[in-house]
Amino acid sequence: MQGLRETADIIGEAVGHPFSSNPQKTGAITATDKGSTITGVKSDVQKMLAVTWQGKRSIAVESRPRPHVTDPSDVVLRVTATAICGSDLHLYLGFMTGMQKGHILGHEFMGVIEEVGSGVKKHSVGERVVVCFDIACGSCYYCKHSMFTACDTTNSSKAQSALYGDCSAGFFGYSNMTGGYEGGQAEYVRVPFADMNCLTVPKGMPDLKVLLLSDILPTAWHGNECAEVAAGDNVAIWGAGPVGILAAHCAQARGAKQVILIDGEEYRLQFAKSKLPGIHTINYHKENVKQTLGKLLPLGAPDACIEAVGMHYTKSTLQAAELAVGLATDSADMLNEIFNCCRKGGRVGVIGAYAAYTNHLNIGAFMEKGLNMRAGQTPVQRYWHTLLEMVQKGRLDPTMVITHVKPLEDAAEMYKTFNAKADGCVKVVLIPPHRARSRLPSGRGGVPEHHLRADRPCAAHTAGVASGATGSVAPAIAGGGEDPLSRSDVGSVV
Image (tube, rainbow, N blue to C red; front, side):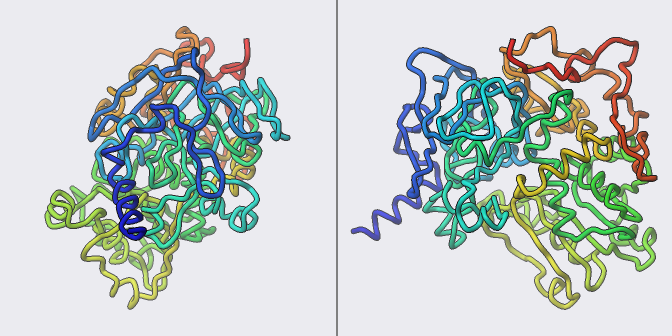
């Protein structure tokens, strides 16, 4: 009977507990088997708006009770900016197991600390912080070895353990498989183990400059680390979404000789070229990828390849059909093309999110060509301070990918826009309603026009990255005046 109960628990968790209530909605306090609180104490009176998953392609902004400090290591954050990540689209489209109706989404966010637990040593009320997507305890074996996304404390998912043989860390806003923690696409969020998972924002740095340190800038850097990108390398990157574009940006900052970005959406490739002078692009709908790489590169193939696409994107009819009928959870199309295109003895970094099983993976090409591949969720805390310094000095400019800044209440529509690749959408930032509406800038997508001009390159390039020059980057606002979301006081306690 015990084995049957465990099996039932695993299946229930994987499919989202269809016959049980969601603790995020009921207010029940839950914890991992090692004592990390997942859903904590809520207010009986105070409410907040939160972006919630209601089912496949269904998002709603709901009123929810505000969270309170539950454990001594917690803080509660008043969110000042949050983003929709490309990996959120895996949830939106129903490709991630373990989702439950009413889950609060979002793992890229920042804000101002409003409550502090008695055990928090590094942070205080009123401080501006960025929060990493991965929830690390800081004291387990893996955290002590800087493997923060492998934290042994913050996730005890039976379904994930059965599928992978072990558990990842808990992640904000990303299904029961990664703990079932409430996400940051909300007005307020509880942050466990705050001393490990919050990064203090230096005075003078605006929200948009640091928000993407929560995930996609470190993830872009992690892709380069996994592929061991070094000076003089020829690098090919599959996926021209925000992570792929920033991975190209990071590759250039690391001294790559040639950087080639591959995608099937022409507008994204043109957008990337406008921000990153010197990169090459390949539209796989118009060109044969392998043949084009052969013409561009001395050895006819890249030294390093980065996969920034993920589980549900296909190029073949067979793989698309298998995903549609449930014969696989993930597509192998992008990895197969990478194995085919990478030079012999080359290096592959995989940062696109994958869930479980795929078919037709060309493992023979991987083995016979002597390729090396590394993958994994990004241990954000490992890279935080290096990347923050590079942003401060102007060597990296994560704001280049932001095309839409919208009110949190528009989340459902922006999920649709982002997924449809409509309106030139590359990256969406959502602003909670407690931020004064007058601070939302004008322009297409709510972003100042100077951020959107097709001829405007990345600020890091104009600051002299190629020559190693550094310095603060503060581009002028088109037509004069101040960019409201470039103010360093945005989100401060008033």
